[in-house]
Length: 423
Image 1: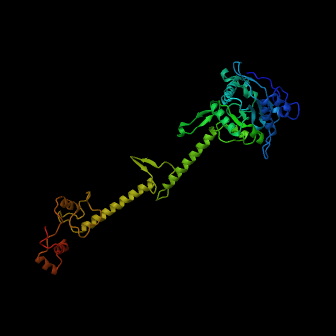
Image 2 (image 1 turned 135 degrees about the vertical axis):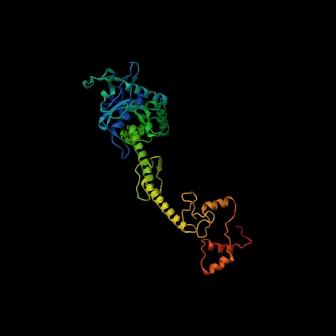
Image 3 (image 1 turned 90 degrees about the vertical axis):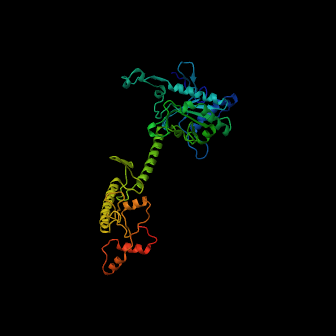
């Protein structure tokens, strides 16, 4: 890796002779000689050093001595070179080095974009690291990027940044030119896309270890607001920012982690809202884990307005006890009633059968459920008891007949005269 000599600001080292910046900034000779590009470079450096000219603009950073021009960097192989218009060092604001390219809109955007792959190739170059602390490492592991030794203090992933300052056209044309250069050089600055499959989303982040940070602005904005004003557009990031903000890598792992944390917080909030709806209506318990568990051979899912498993079990056992108590009470009551007319068994039906009555039979019931179902299956019509005879009616005037169906027989005789009845 070889670097050329460091001249003064502008060209040939002549710019520091007269005035604070020399004739290169305010001397008319450069304009008459046709060195318009050199004048644009001088104006760019002046804006960095002096700051903005509009009211309330940010001040400048560094001095003329912070800059070097006419610096050449030889690419691997020794035939090609990288020659930035300016190299700025401002470690006091966290910018160890910034390569500056000034574009007067005289070249095609593709030609401007073609410079950035050469910068990346230059910054990829590694040299031997002679640090004794790394002496035990393998030779392949004892190399570092040359620029980290030349300009130490870099804390951001990626290579040293490059600033593109455009001029020579109107605002709309310059905005389109910056966008065109960004589109044509996307492979240099976009970084490598990464994602975590385990996070179950399509989101991800970009790694910038092999990316070239590129920021762009116009000379008019730079002269008006200074380098620390909100004038820089970082390729791949919306909006314009101050210099230090623009150099922060967009959509990196830290930004992804913040988004992922927000998603997890939202999922937790939604889940907690669901858990709050699953409060047990008996004991008030709010579940903390998932809502579905397996108990033995049963899977139990809590639902809004429901009960926890313990209260559900208690309720089921209580309902079973109440059902058994109700059944026993119904059996006792039905046993005390008159028997079934057909089978002479309990009016409530056979104990344990599916048709057994689980409540006390109505007073007008004549058959048990089994005999009633058999009568319906044979289409025999409703049961009508035989009408009382005259002798039974006379005997009933003296004493109550010993017949559990007596009152129903008397009622049926009134409701169903002899000509309508079929026993």
